Length: 295
Ligand code: GUN
Image 1 (cartoon, helix red, strand yellow):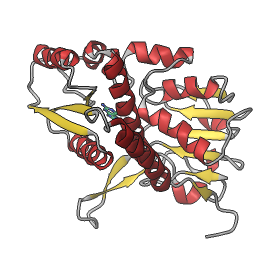
Image 2: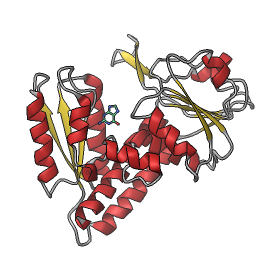
Image 3: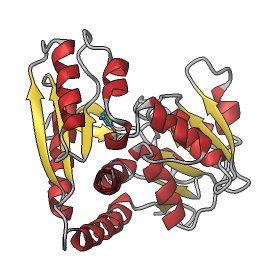
Image 4: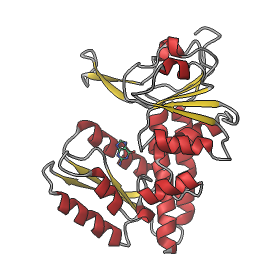
């Protein structure tokens, strides 16, 4: 490794410290209350979604959160799914509800998200929760942007005064992250770029903090970074690779090897933001248990 290479933001280590904290909070919580309970809903057999849900179950078990996964065939009628969500809303033994996305095409994601009780919406996708993030009084922060802000904080990287450039305008990452970074506790100056942005590289090259969340493997190359930038790679792309047992490898949206020599800090894939997303969901589930207990 050349001495000028970026420092690594170690998602494994940071996610572990978040998990340890949640675990301690749950130990204290369960001295006189039941453990937090999370229900995941999985529709169809998208392999990535199944893997995510399995990972979430495993993480939850490790910190003392109880889980169930309701699994349905891909042809589940939308009304059945909405009925399931309403039942979970009404069930006092369920603290958190997570409907894994994407849903099959015949189901309107937004209608399902809107049906989740905002007090059980551990993904933070309900419009009430997104609105609260925008206003700066969040209940649940979507796990990926929450994890990014937490990573920066735990590496003592202060976004204040930085030109933060986010590539990707999703409701799950880009939009909520832009809101978080512009809040008074972060004080970054935020630009959100997307597929119709003209001269994208002109924006990314002046970034002090660059967040790649567009979902295209290795999209951000060395030519798109011009200074000692903090580079956060949200991409988790499956790239076909017959030399691996699984037949694919995971790559980020950033060309890690090329960008590393220019950046000041960089997150790897795997071992970066993805682990933080999982850890912050646990934190949100603990929050849901507190809300449920005080309801
Ligand atoms: N699909 C991709 N990311 C997520 C996530 O964070 N939560 C849910 N429910 N589905 C997803």
